[in-house]
Amino acid sequence: MYRPRILLWTASAAVFVIASALAARDARACDNQTNGWVNGVSNYWHGTLGRADYCNNASIGPDRQKAADCAWSFTVSRFGPAPDGACARQAIENSPQGRADLDEFVRNWQVASGGDCSAASIAAFFPHWHGALGKAEYCNNASIGPDRQKAKDCAFQALVSDKGVAPNSCLRDAIANSPEGSADLDEFVRKWQIASGADCSPSSIA
Figure (cartoon, rainbow, N blue to C red):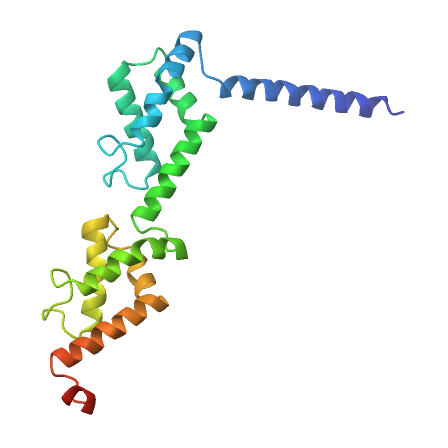
């Protein structure tokens, strides 16, 4: 009475084994020539993602597809087309190392462009933001004065201009609203209220 169930399980297992084998075959590189081409260029492909004169720059930023397109374009330009281009590209980008490289590239550029507003990212950008508030050639001048919003905008613009942070980055508010950022802006406004004569308290008169 149990034979039909055994046969059904055996058939299902066979289908699973065949599907797994096909998936494994598809996950590998293609014919031998293409496989050899992939093995010969993979290190170069990886290197393009780390060099500013190739793909590691703001024109690519945290866009995974642009990064993959850039690395592939430089690789083909350097070594010529693969015997099977579509398969070779898939083999490189979908390999464990290729996926890890692209994941890391995107993560780094999300931080660098201000797409990541975690505490670690705020801490990484804060010193430059803080410095801009203290330098006359940036924000510490009469054109900003005791205007808190102007000071906030100016310090953030220094990140955009100097660090490649995206103009619409969440860092604009994240840094300014952090305890350190808020304290910096309070102090900036206080000093410029005194310097501009807007503070007529006894301590300022004295």
